[in-house]
Image 1 (cartoon, helix red, strand yellow):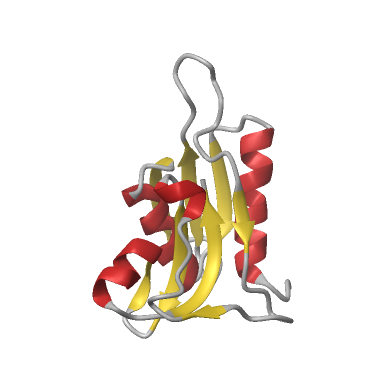
Image 2 (cartoon, rainbow, N blue to C red):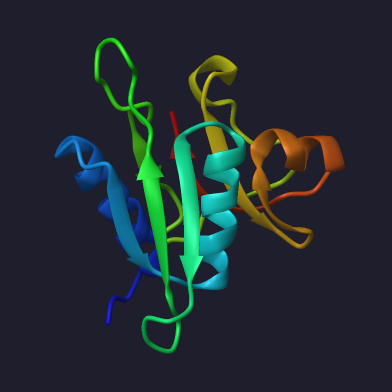
Length: 133
């Protein structure tokens, strides 16, 4: 069992992109499913599939996305911000712009998990989970 399942989720994606894998399998949770949906909606992954048949919690299969010409992964960097030992919270006015608007911050708010831009639009703050660019 890991003490930080979100960091494990991000590390599995990071390791799979560095090894040029097409698909990565991750143990599922509701928070991980929401982060996966955001990554898909923002165009960082090709597709995903939630499978409930493997164990009590199921798994998430993520098809990673690569550039067609250069074969570089679309996810250049995926970085955990709020850790179990040091939580990082931001109000709607303090939410960061990642790579001058080219990247996204994934934020856990009282209205659910969303990108930093969506949280700013809805005027809600929350825990800054990770940066993706």
